[in-house]
Length: 306
Ligand SMILES: [Zn+2]
Image 1 (cartoon, rainbow, N blue to C red):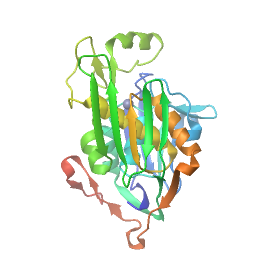
Image 2 (cartoon, helix red, strand yellow; image 1 turned 90 degrees about the vertical axis):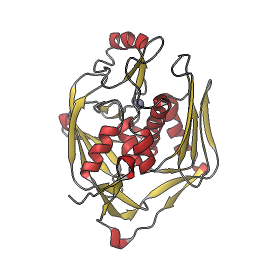
Image 3 (tube, rainbow, N blue to C red; image 1 turned 180 degrees about the vertical axis):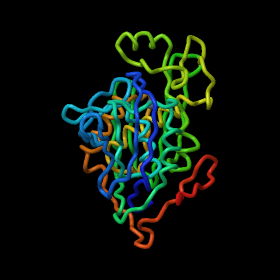
């Protein structure tokens, strides 16, 4: 995990945009070291939008980025997957301004990246290692990063709803834990909000196929985990914090956050330059260009030399 990585080959999928309802084709392509993750709007002549804090734009119900006249919405589940599977560099091509919602989780993106395979590059990965606490709060919403030897996330939520109430979870984030515990947790919304969203031209592509919908007393669809809601919050924060541009070494603790708080925190992390330092991994020259084994569900390795 010390050298930068990219995809071994290009892969693509189609799906619909949660908010626009449009059919979208998404392609993931290899990129060189230090390229980072960049969205490329094929319908706008290949306009590139880097996945960085500096390009943040909308953060209402999903995280959006913009560059010039081009934008891309709902980037968080894909970014969470790329950073958690250790893909530092990639081109994300889209023919619409929204990443497809797929089934509302990150599992389809995990599958896609496993199909592409992963390749190591000849440059060290640079981690953002937290050396003193950084914190941000807004009302009763809180988020903080503390020094730790590993990256882990503790998230808690509380809602006035009989199915959610209070949920809390701590996960040490690595490829395996991401795939097994976080990736398949779906986005969720309240039935009473759906009509309001649609009147505002949002959630036009939303359905029980890509979101957990909560009625007055319970969910309209079956849950994948009893605490799927807090797991999805962890997925969201991983994607939003990917915008700092480096994998983090520290303990992230969040309570009742959302995209607005997560992304404001990503910007605050970069502002507080005395709270972290960049540490470099080591590159094994004999491993450069090698395929990397990626764990799939239940930890079985998937050979990527197809
Ligand atoms: Zn989400």
